[in-house]
Image (cartoon, protein in one colour):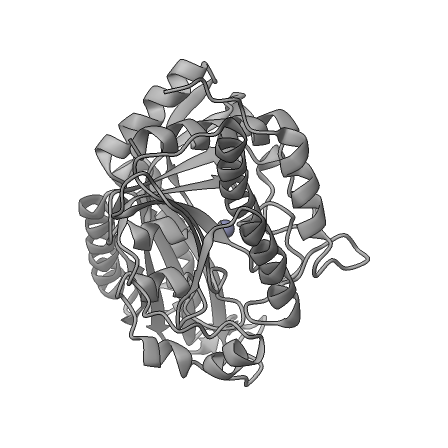
Length: 410
Ligand SMILES: [Zn+2]
């Protein structure tokens, strides 16, 4: 195989800058909610780049866009990709970087006159952020068969719009059945959106998986009573019980489970909510996360056990409701190993890690061996206009993607 020139940082940066003007506000944030006018404009910009590269363009019925570059042989594609939609007042890199770096890889191969054995593709997945239409990662979820197409098209957005009609309005209701492109390997390059790489001065994160999430709502019922006349031993204090839960989940994460277990009590509401009344009711939520499903299940059980003890100790009644649960995803060990081999050869400081956020790659992992490559987010900031990555790190990520794709395609 001929020596491959590296990706062109300036070309990549100028395309990122052009894309960042679409949906930009005066405050510096970028808002491209899924299937809005700015999303359409961003998609059109990327379609233009795909046409320049003479890719075969396919748009599927959920609006996912694929640009395919033929290989020497026909067959399943080695796919790169990410998304173009953003949160409100998001940054220039989340999603955009993965798509544009994928196109940069193809441009570099064109310039070097390299044709891979397998075909290559760059994907733009629809509605990754899930702000306007739930659930998030909808395009890749439908592609992977995890959500029925008609159900996705019928989704009513937070603004009352219907997904399928908006998709037609912006001209991206394509003819192809989602999932009809056979995929050999999927590799997604993304900014970390957390502080780990930046803190450790690492340049590349070799992502081994995505952590699982378990959301529980807890209702606690006690008895309202006078704060001045009710002795402590006679109280059925829902507020105190709720505070015990909030305190406990930190111990649960730190002491009882350990490892990378996380626990957050994000909502805590008391009724009647008066300064001189013992609370009668409390509503709180617990967010548990772990990259290992056995540990996540154990954390859920410990929480249940704690609530039983609490009922007895504080003479309150508790009830729980599962709000959401996604299992952890482990990426393909061989593909993760291939990425690590490339990073080691290119001599970038790196670490293996788990993604704290959800990504399209976690649904693609159902379809084919998949993995992710992270680059540092300065200060760990993302979903913010202040989202940034050092240019040399953007370049490093694109070079790792280039080399990993070359190996996966031959
Ligand atoms: Zn993203």
